[in-house]
Picture 1 (cartoon, rainbow, N blue to C red):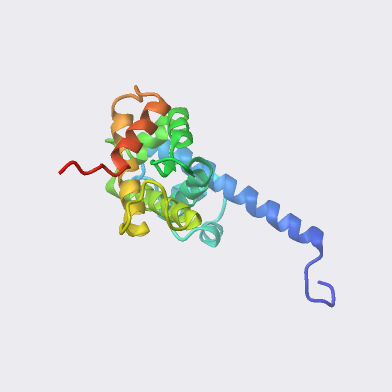
Picture 2: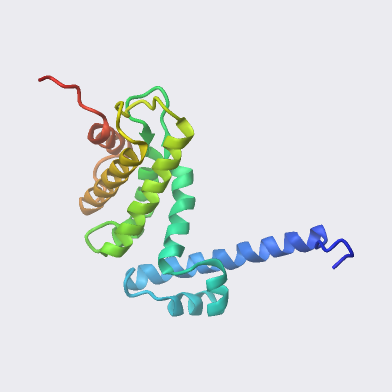
Length: 196
């Protein structure tokens, strides 16, 4: 290490690439084990064996199997769940529905009838976190959020609605289109006008 106490730039890039490769190996191994055995049956030992990494290496990156699933979902939701400006439905989940259609088995395992309460809880928590972040980014006056409704409550309702819709859709063989699912999501989460 140079006298400055910092690693040379090239060493940092090697470390970053090594971390990315290790995480990728763990991610792929986890998904393969999940497909083979289901969420509750997969354990960290299975994942590290399939990823060809040490147990200590796994724990350098993730605290648990739940943390690994949560990290994967955060990356996915960051790319597929968006704020919808100028529209009564504040969230656009069309890209998320498209992803579900691309890998339906994964969603059956974490949100469908064959899912466990634990995997569904992790999914709902990740959805709530993403919805909350989108609400925080948009600030006050979010379309679709009635006055007096705390953003944290709206985020939880939207997450629970998405979890329920993903499960419902998966159980029915993904018959509805991505756009139809977005319309259903919007209808379930938009405030109703009072007629009384």
